Length: 395
Image (cartoon, rainbow, N blue to C red; front, side, top):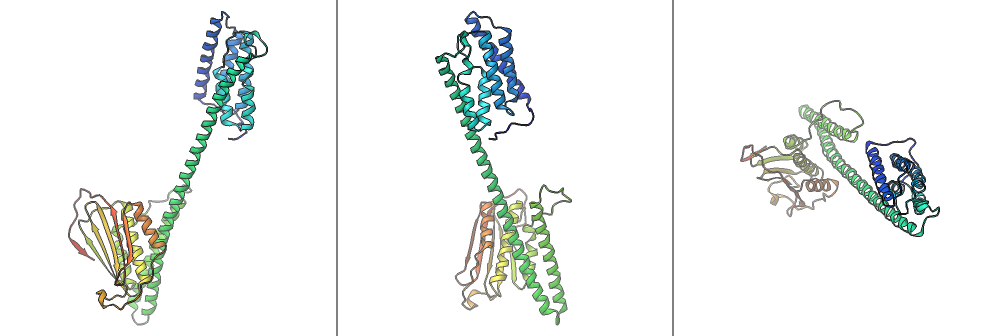
């Protein structure tokens, strides 16, 4: 809590209504006490009670000043209408609560001590407060201060939890952006490197193949820039007005493109689609796309001359994707020489696991006994009402 008051008085309609209600309650309570003691309520006492209640509108910005005003005005009814029965005005309860809530303990403690004797000054026509009245006041002060302390603790806990949730959200967004950047850079840069090498190797004796490689290289670079620009737009969200519609995130419909890129990069790649094709949720489609993209990138980077098979299977309530390579390019596996497959652990597989976990699915990624590597994921995707074409299709 800050120790400085606001520079200007600020209050709301709620503050005004609360002050009016407090004045009414204090007037009724004090007048009932005076009637029971056959002591008439004077105009000065009533005016002091109303002014003390109205001062509460400034309790948020100037709580200490408001408490001092309420304490001083509280002595006026005691002197003007000497009722012997003890009373602790509601306005004093609210003012003391505001001080403990919005000021440091070094300020709140003296305020509580002052609030113990002062409300009883002048009661029953006595200048010094009676001992039993001070005890009653002390009990009320302890109750009010304890309530304010408990509320302060709950507010701090709520703020800490809110800050923790915000930090977790930021960390999750950073991980998501890191996954996207890794997938974009790993796939497109690897493809561009292979395309550039192929173009250089064929430039002299086969210009047409070199031209196709350069076209693919240009498309891959353009795609990488577009996807990285989308991520930068996420980071800059709120800083600038949108200049145009956001490009859609890649999905299952883009698998043909990365299959073609994989083939042009020198990896013989086959895509098989099983089951009735249907639209998938955007996040599921993006996850499938990134899994295939990362798996094929790993194949080009780690498997040497290899052939890859991508199988996408639509189930009733899920979609499964599998990417498998042989590691040498020779089918079947029995015809391939024995070799030790290089490890393929790193940010790519970690990113795939995180993506699948966020969708509530499962992922398997491991080297095959006979050589090669397999990545398989199952993602929840409840079937829609629209019917798709069934059967197995190869691309």
